[in-house]
Image 1: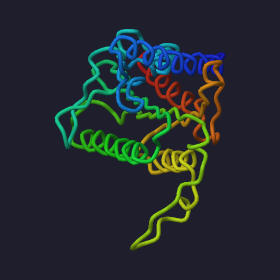
Image 2 (image 1 turned 180 degrees about the vertical axis):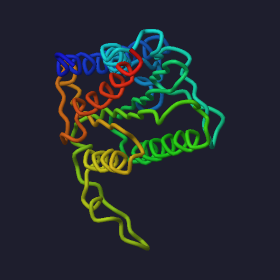
Image 3 (image 1 turned 135 degrees about the vertical axis):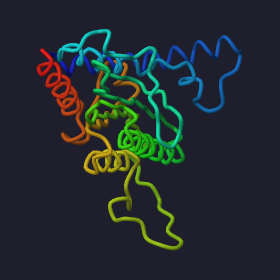
Image 4 (image 1 turned 120 degrees about the horizontal axis):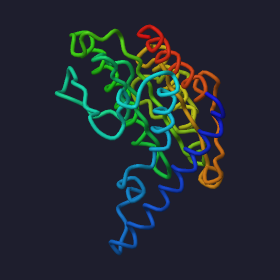
Length: 242
């Protein structure tokens, strides 16, 4: 994992610059922009820097290019649904070795999007583990499941959120918590509940992100810790088959 911080910085720059170029290109081509900030995300590819980084980590751990999927053949069977298209897969010798999902959120609308992302993260993991339990990936051993989230660091994401509790109180950790803190709580609980084997929360301002600047709110959710887990899992399998 040499120069990991520099690699993450490169992925951060790719995200912000690609996002900006998509917004400009779509606005010019259509003469009007998508509602809200959909313009910047409907083109896709803005998180490819992180996908490529994790793919490279798997190759450096001993997997081959033919065993890592990131552009096609990304579907896996589910339990509550027929299939899901994931962002990165490692399938080695017919066995599912690793699965990684990448998500991002940029302001100004953090409210409904946070709940959607939380439900999506919990639901995707629950579906995958139920499918694994029922033998969907045989003869695979338990695969490594990862989740990387990039969040815009700005005034609205750092401001405490007002709570509505008309019937029952929310858990104390959510009270007066900003969306940055809510995402930290979410990803920490996803990790500690073992819904995911690795989670990473990366914060970046738009201005700083274009220069590759980023931060992580805790060591537990750092990309370095995430990368170490993913690399170790792949390297262990690579050594066993050699």
